[in-house]
Amino acid sequence: MSLVRYLPVPSDRMGIIWSLLNVQGSIVLEYGPAGTTHYSMGLYGGLGIRFQNRLFTTHMSEDDVVMGDVTRLEESLIELDKNYEPQVIFVVASSVTAVIGTDIKGVCRYMQQEVKAKLVAFEQGGFLGDYSVGTSEAYKLLVRNLPKKGVSKRPLTYNIIGASAWHYRISSDIWEIDSLLKESFGMSRIACLCCNTSVDEIAEMGAAAVNIVISCEGLAAAQLLQEQFGTPYVYAVPYGYQETLRFLQQVGEAVGTAPDPMVMMRINMKEKGLGMLGMMRMMRGGNMQPRAAVRGEYDTVVGISGFLAEAGIAVEQKICAHSLKNVADPAEGVVHYENEKDWLAQLRPLQRTLVMGDDIALLQCDSSNTKLRISAPFLEGALIASHLPFMGERGADFLLEIIQEYYQKA
View 1 (spheres, rainbow, N blue to C red):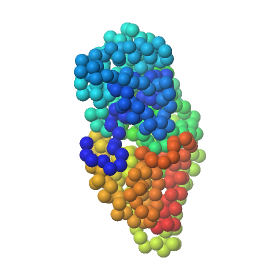
View 2 (view 1 turned 90 degrees about the vertical axis):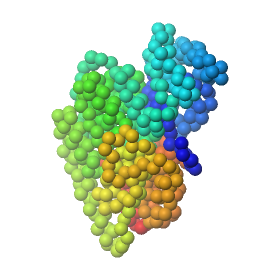
View 3 (view 1 turned 120 degrees about the vertical axis):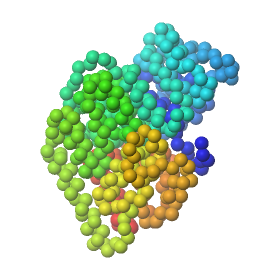
View 4 (view 1 turned 45 degrees about the vertical axis):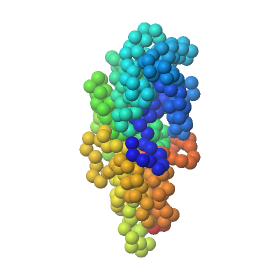
């Protein structure tokens, strides 16, 4: 790990845990020392995750590590099963147990006879990569273990896959997608991996008519569901008016139903109105070429950069906050810097630029820039509202306001 001045990128283990904590009806048991779990709890709370009576640790001792004794894990499983009666217990490795090579899957296999809850083991301990790898692994193990076989298909239903709790304002983006699909097709959602969903909802995922993937981390899980249930999937992330129109068209093709023409007309009119931005800038006599820098998760960077380009703003820095390991063919211009100092150096000289990113990225830029927080981590405030999206029609409306503010200031 390179030297970090601000905040390190969360590990795969963190991505797994915050994904699982969004599955109601389950408990997450970390097999490790109490300190690692306690340190993480502040982060999960800041993301707006409800984990009371759902996140536990076995509190390993030095003797457990040296001797490889798993008695605490066995006793913890029995105690949690008896006292809380969860439908599923997810057993997650800590960095310590990953290093010593504890066979968590093996323990869960023989302990399954002793408990009523379904046991699902995750042996990644923070060494396979950053959180984007962890969330992808969580989605895959969930769809391998929880969906019921032989469910009947329900027309005009869908699952959302790739909704990471680390994604800034993810609840609002899910709300916007749900609203768009309800208005355009009369569709309803079954499950969402992983944002405010449940064991029961995931069990019914095979009944969906289509799976909607909103991040590259969700692609592998969608492909598994297609193999298991024959469910088609749409990988479309609706940032901006044009991409929202394309998103609705793709969903319509997947389910064999055209989107509501009035909805399409309304969004299309807004998309055509983007040309007014350039006229406004010319009328103001601005000589500076509008430019932007965007930092965040891969699909956020690609989607928002595309919308800014439609609005006549050249995005000169497209910085992905996580590794591109899960991206089969990264979009042109999107880069990931392994060392924190390298991406900091890209942002600090910016002047009169539209800067969109996390709080640390925004701190690097002086007051001549127009700034907007679009990604985690955030240093101030809390995630409470669930009606302030960046995706879809409403998200594009909001981003357009920021673009106009930039034009007036630049």
